[in-house]
Image 1 (cartoon, rainbow, N blue to C red):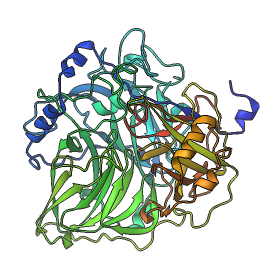
Image 2: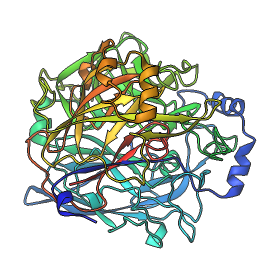
Image 3: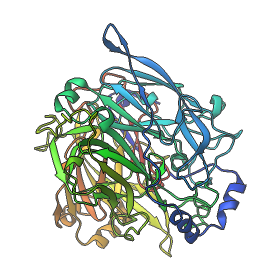
Image 4: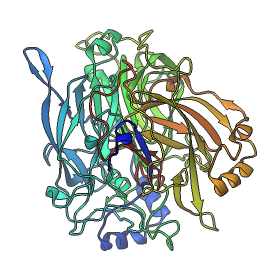
Length: 589
């Protein structure tokens, strides 16, 4: 299937990824009678700030020989167990990652990798014969012939061979009893060659990603590079924390709620375009608290929610110093009062609690849902967690950390680099006559359609991403790194949309005559090489994409020409393949 031309190019295939959850019929029936009021009542009964924020176990992704970091092999499994999301909530059945069932957690362990030291991970599926959540077989999904929960792991933000990318078609069931058509190997190789930064790993199975993530299959991953990290003197050790934010709804019995009836059930009986939980969890606890001392803390914040955006701020006005976004540092820190995180987006920040004027500080959320034109958050989803600020004790070490003046030279695109190709990437949403969403496509294409984008390895491209839907969409690309450089509103939007619906060609529809509205500046704290960019509705977002290692300007040191390639997609509405039901793309070198 790989011709000579494909061996010389990167092929980006528009893939449609959907929401699906494999589940027994009795689970769906049990949830069918649950109302929004029931879910709000359960969440509202949980007292805030009574559970301490946990930190997930850290697994070192390298060994040492003669003082040098060397590659190692890890085995990480996926297990069903129960998890306490709140002191007063019954234990919840979840799917979680861990090196064994006892140590598996929600979210999974944090993997600490070393730059340029490969890590080999054998991912094992130990999940049961059926899902704990409902799923919809009418959307493209992995359905094994003999039962089981299909899974496959994607390391979000990583540069790695295509066989280790976690293709939606490379799924497998427990014990590798059944495997998807793109499955090739049980052990994935992560070269860790890209710049240091924050990544995360999560399920990526076709049609089941939304459900598998909702069930708990996600975890943090960090690539460290001491020669870059250490001179910055950022807070470290106990002052360096992960905050994995995820909204969830719970049934009275403590089980996770997921809708069993779709928004257009005559078309998709169960599928819904978005999921918004009533409770906000951080590191697997609903509205936790964290005791901090009067010193600086580094907070690596990941929004692992299905569709919810978070616009976070500190209740007493403390500034937030942003040092990184997704898998890259910034050129220099940017100080903000609030921070907008899309699903799947990561920000690396420093907060100086020595400057706190109060003994308690809430982390608040003001993002409407759906974003940006939905309902304002209420008393439950408007709060995330609380920091309890205590004086430094006599045994506390001095705080010698800093917010550095400068970071890395390769982060920001100060001038548009030479590009080999300009492409138009268009997001469409398809509705019923009554306005219910049935599916969303990129460039009007389905997952099954042929490759349409063919960027070459080692090059930079300019993508004009046009959002014709009503919501903001987080666009994610596998392998490459990108950053938005311009966001310009479309004028006469309906006329342009009508033309695009008819001919599906931005040039023929005179996009340049429509992309003349106000320009919204890209926030300074997003000016770096990212893995997720926000694409506002009714806008053309100009995106520079580098299909290479951005810190060294080198091509990838592995074969990118192999099947099954890579993908790009929207990360809303199910956090991938269940999200914007049909946004995804494959990449071949």
